[in-house]
View 1: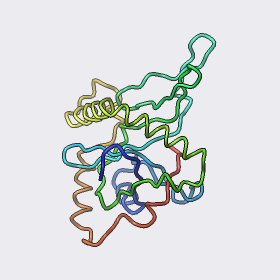
View 2: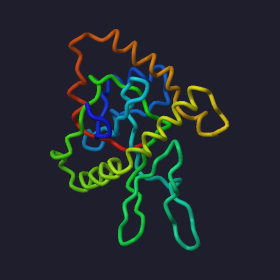
View 3: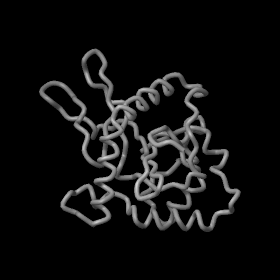
Length: 198
């Protein structure tokens, strides 16, 4: 498994975590576009593979500057993935570090971009993948920082309070691995794709 590639997470594992941590993003089993799940990238922290979910742009990702609406700068918990188009920054999506989760390798599936039937979505994910490769250091630094801040319960930064409880999630991840049959794989459903509802 390679860091900073595009992955999806099995329904079974997401459902398991949400029993104990309901703020973990849902795979939206009953509300998918063409049965696709949301996708994200993966980074290793504290010996765990952390899945960082990607999210569609929201109004809160923009600010008004004069007569124009411009993309806000990235902050520690949210990295805004942009691309220059005719000299102007265009927001493609966000990486939600505040909602990253540790995932067993068996529950991760590499996103099959080449076989994506939706050309618009394929182009979008390709742009995001390029942004991720160009900004590996920033993503790693921000992820490590928010992880440490949460670990130390450093609430001087307001975003720490709303970040997921990574320590508890690591306990749940380890328990899931320990209780899983050795032949459990990341479920055939994890190869399907994405939904962006977050």
